Image (cartoon, rainbow, N blue to C red; front, side, top):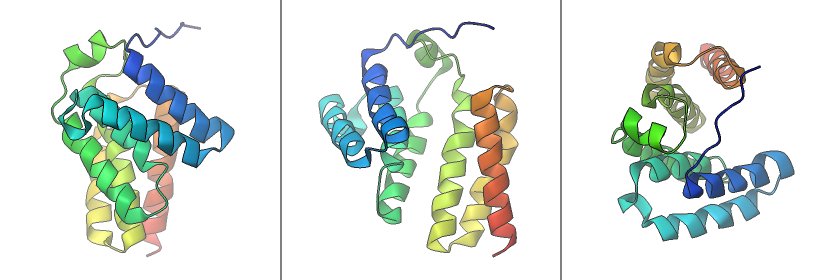
Length: 158
């Protein structure tokens, strides 16, 4: 088993703490509070695109309103468009920038599906499917593939 390199970026580590609050402790509101504090500290959308991307992507997951979730996911996508592989590598992230897009596009597909904009949902699902090759075959890739399959089935039934 290959040991995963440690994230060396302090802001990403703090974002991960919020993710753990949400995903492993079920504390959405606490995670949202952590994310809000970090968002203010990084200067919001004017911050480092890597921090903006990861934080907005995480913040979207703790929203109660799908319109707010969509707004955060769109912020994450816009920030991803400003990233370079050199920047993510510098932060200790092993995934190339292209590997971020399937998850970002999947989340957007799901938001648009929830909002009833099925054409846009299908468009983002196709984008996610087209980019899935940037991922390996690890647990993360399997999670994203499972999400793609789930959304594809939901859209087929609508």
